[in-house]
Length: 283
Image (tube, rainbow, N blue to C red; front, side, top):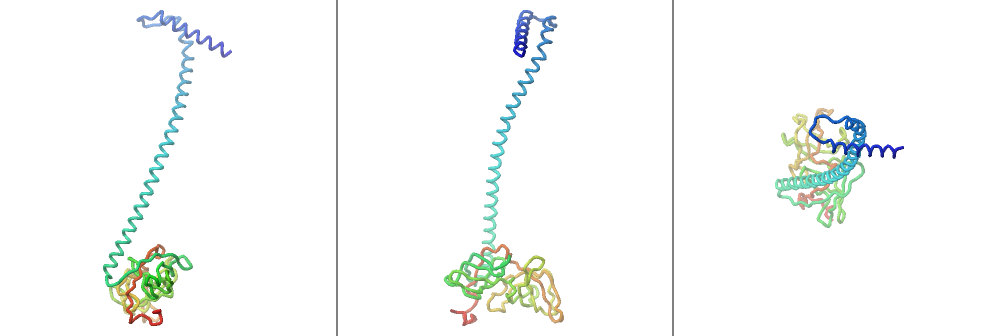
C-alpha cells in the first residue's frame, strides 16, 4: 500500500513539473489543472519538508552537544590551571610576608642570633602546648633557649635531643614568662590557661591593684627573666579582672602567635649569657 502511494506521488510530481514547463509564461494565475495538482502535492511536500528539517535539526543538535562538551572540557582545564596559579600565588605571598616579618623582627633585635627550625610534631591535644622542632644539640640548641616567630614569643626549649628539641609554648599551663604592659610598664607573670571561648590564651597575674590595665593593651616580655629578651611581643589584653583580695589585678591575654598554624620557628641562641645559664644544664 505504501509503495503504491509513493508511486502515485512520484507520478503526480512528474506531471506537475511537466505542466509547469508547458504553461510557463507571464501570467498571474495558474491553470485549473495546476491548481488541482498543487493542492494534492502541497501537503505531501510540506510533510517531507518538515521531516527533513527535523532530521537536520537533530544532527545540528548532536553536533552542538559535542562542541559544548569540548568547550566545557577546555574551560574546566583553564579553571583548574587558574586555581593552581592562585594557590601558588597565595603560597608565595604568605612566604614573602613571613620572611619580611622575620627580617623586621631581626632588625629590631639585631643583637641576637637565630636558628631556624621546622615544627615536626606536637604533644597531645589539638593545640601546640608542647611541640617538637627539627634542631637539637648538634645544631647548638640548649634547654631554656627562647623560641620566637615574627609574630612574637612562642615559648622556650624544655628538652634537647641530638637533632630535635621539645618546646614548651606560652599557652601551656606550666609556662611562666615575666611580662609587662607596653603602655604603663606594669609588670606581671604570664601563664598559660585552659581554653577560653574555644581558644587557648594566657593570664597575666599579679598586676598592681592600682594598675590601669585595659582591654586592648599590648603585653611584651619584661626582661626581668634571664631567659627571655626584653620587649618581645606576647599578646593583647582581652579581659581584665580584680583579684578576690583586691590587692592585685589580672588580665586575660590573647597571644599574637597563632599556635594552630605553627610551621616554622626561630631559636634565639645567645639570649642567655654564660654567667646566667644554669650550671647543671651545661652538659
